[in-house]
Each structure stands twice: as C-alpha cells, then as structure tokens.
Length: 379
Image (cartoon, rainbow, N blue to C red; front, side, top):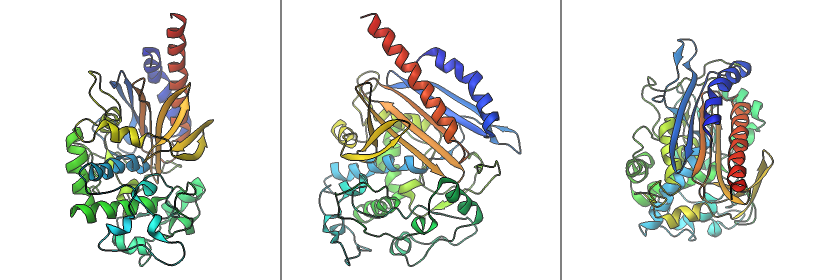
C-alpha cells in the first residue's frame, strides 16, 4: 500500500461515483496487519444529501459467509462439531431429504466450501412489508418468499434465474465432487449452529465472534430502525428497502466499514505478532479456512480456489484471500494477503457498484506491486 494510492482516492473516487451514478462508498486500507486509513465518499442518503460516514452500517451480503465460518469453527474448537461428520447427525428440528443422493456425505466442511452438492437457492430477500417465513419452511420449500419488482430487476441485472434463486434446499451432486456456490449451504450452517448451541444464530455469532473481536457495530439481526444505516439504491439510482434475509448466514450480516476492516485484520497476524484469530479462534483454524480445497471460479483474470468460506488465489507467488458480496442495494469486497499483512475492503450502498470496486482493487494491486518491485530493487 502506498500513501500515493490513498491520496489518489480523494481525487479519483468522487469522480468515479459521479461517472457511475453511485451514491457512496466506504473504503478501509490495511497495511502492516492494521488499518492505516478509512475513507468515506458520497452519500449515505442522496435525497437528504446525508454524507456517508464511518458510523453508517451496510449489508455485507455474501461476505457474511466467511464470518459465519468463524462461528462454525468455534463449535469445532469447543468440541461440539466434527467438520467431517454428517451434518444430519447434529440437526434436531429438520433433516436433509433422503430421496436421490445419500445425504450422509454432506458435512460442515463441504457446506463451508460449497462442495457439499447443494443447489444455489436460498439467497432471496423478503420485502419488509411481507410476512417473514421461518428458516425451516424456507429450506424445505414449504414457503417461498415472494419477490418484489426491485428484487426481480436485480436478479435480471446480475443474470440469476429466479427459479434457481427461489429453489429450496436441493441435493444436485454427490458431495465433494464439484464446486457449486450455494446460499442453501449457508442456510443449513445457520440451522446447524442453532441446533448445536441451543441459541439463536444472531446471539451465538455475537457472543462467540463479534464480542471477542470487538465488532460492536456488527450483527445478523435485521435493523429495527435504519437511522445509522446507509440507504441502499438499485443500479438506476432509486432507493429500495433493506430486505430481510431468512438465510442470514448466507448474506444477512450488517456492519460498518471499521468492523469489516477489524474482522479482516483478525484473519491475519497482528502488528505486534498477535496470532490470527485473536480471542475468537486459534491461528490453526484460520489457516485451515484459508487452505485451498478445489478450483472455484475465475474473476478479474485470477483463478480462485475455495477454502472454508473464503476464496483463495495465488498472486505474485503469494496467497491472497478474497470474498465479495452482492445483493439488491449493496456491494462489498474484502481482499487481503496474510503473509504481507495488507488488505483492501470496501462497502457500496448500490447494487451497481461492481465497476467501482473492481477498478479500485486493480489500482490497489498495481500500487502494491510497484512497492514490492521497489523493495526487490533495493535488495
């Protein structure tokens, strides 16, 4: 990370927000395993001309998944869960369908790595004006949350088939044979955490992840009030609701940019040599989550392998850990290099924000590459 890159943000980001017709973005830059800079640009609410600030919360969408995996790993460390045992052995309120493929091979490790053979499904939101179905009814397909026109427009914009989005938990492949990005897998992990712990998913994650990490502005609860939330906008710049997420573990986390940066730093050793995991997990568990399992996808010219709740790539011979999030009204990105201790996280209150974060992360990577080349030249 260079100070020049951070300074360039002040001139570049406002221009890009205007060119792309986006409301706002919060960015945190990490260097030396600690937050070096937090910058907020644009508006939390365009209509009120409310400037975006560090206190504003965002919906993290799928960056919820790596955080959920921390919760799963606390169960493992407490001796309450075996990553490779059939998850159905731990479920008490609902069980996997037995028709077709044998569910015995579906494990927590497979669910966390999207290799359990489950269909995508389970990722739709619920308009606040509609009744909220239970997680059990959603997983089983007894209740299908209705989509409003905003959600339908979003899924059309990102190229997702509505039938797949609304699909209940369905086993479509033999566990361990292929990568299938699955929100249903994380809905099942949410149920698993609740059934093993006897607590609500929100309470468990607060007690065993957020509080130990000092993430006091984070939660999986749906906001009762939206006073401290950025307003979400669609890709045409129209304000839309903050949707309920039934499968909260898949995409329902809310946090400030500072808390997301704090979590990212906890995935690496601290500036004084503190072990990754801090007070929530052991470093071995964090290392396991960052260990590649199988090829997942390619994005921005890089090949990613799935870890446990994280996507892993090799850049300049070093491991980069990555995840993004997208939902109606929100975009997020988290990317960091554990060995170097640097990272980039950003939150955008618009579902049209992909071009912005992609451009900035490319610029960040190029700036970092220049620093490394300079260090190599100096020997």
